[in-house]
Amino acid sequence: EPEVTQTPSHQVTQMGQEVILHCVPISNHLYFYWYRQILGQKVEFLVSFYNNEISEKSEIFDDQFSVERPDGSNFTLKIRSTKLEDSAMYFCASSFVYGYTFGSGTRLTVV
Amino acid sequence: KQEVTQIPAALSVPEGENLVLNCSFTDSAIYNLQWFRQDPGKGLTSLLLIQSSQREQTSGRLNASLDKSSGRSTLYIAASQPGDSATYLCAAPISGNTGKLIFGQGTTLQVKP
Image (cartoon, rainbow over all chains, first blue to last red; front, side, top):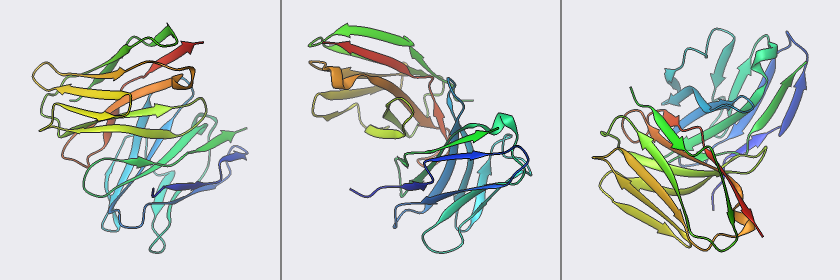
C-alpha cells in the first residue's frame, strides 16, 4: 500500500537554528499538508498546499515557517529560527480526492 | 466553526470485550469523517473513512458509523485484543473533502489481557 515517507524520524536542534523536515507524499496525490502535535495536545493543522502554492495556513504558520515542493516528489517544511515551543511531532499528509494518508512523523526537539 | 470532541479521554477494558468509542462534531455539513489509530510516539494510521452519503464502514473487527443529524460518529471494536491498545482519533475536514482536518483529542484505549 502506498505510504507517505517522512525523514528524519527524530531531529534535535538548538534554539535559533533552521530546520528542514522532509516528506515524500504518495505519488498521484494532489493535496499536501503539514500538521503538528505538541506532546499531550491535539493534532493541529499548519498548512495545505495545492497546485504549487499554499491553499490555506493556520495562525501558527507565521513568517518563520515555509513550505516547498522543490521537485515532483518532495514536500518540505522549513522553520527558519526554531523556538523551544516548536518542539512537537510534525506530520506530513497527502490526499487525492478524499481521505488523508499521514506519514509516521518527525519528532522535533528544540533545546 | 467545526469542533470535534471525543469522550471518554481514556478507556480500559478486559480482553475480549466489545467496545464503542464516541466522536461528536458541531457542524453537520461534513463531507467525510476519518478514524485514525496512533500508537505512543508514532504516526497516524487511517482505520476507516466514512463519506457523508454513507452510514457506516467496516474493516475486520472495526465498524464506524456516521449520523450527521445528531453530529455523532462511533467506532465499534469487536472482541478487543491487547494489540488494540492505542489512542484513537477522529477527524473531519472543515470544508470539502480535502479541507484542513479538525481532530478530536482522542480516546486512549487499554485492553488488558
